[in-house]
Image (cartoon, rainbow, N blue to C red; front, side, top):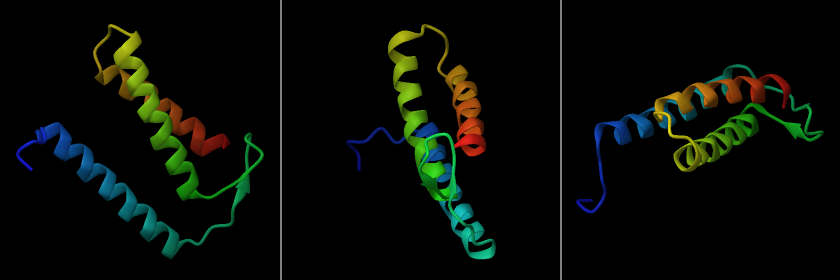
Length: 90
């Protein structure tokens, strides 16, 4: 694994993703859900909305790196707003 850039931010990122997946698994077991239809007009569950959020956040961060000269942590604010919108309306 010496070829990879394992830095503290990288480790924190993967720990947060693992923690999120564990949390969503526990929520699914304790509080079973029924799919709902949002603005995309497709049935989505909590896990689907999490996937859409993670995928969209990746694209937001890539676009931020390429198009915006502001510091990268500001992209986190945009991603959090995006995540709130996805979980509310999708």
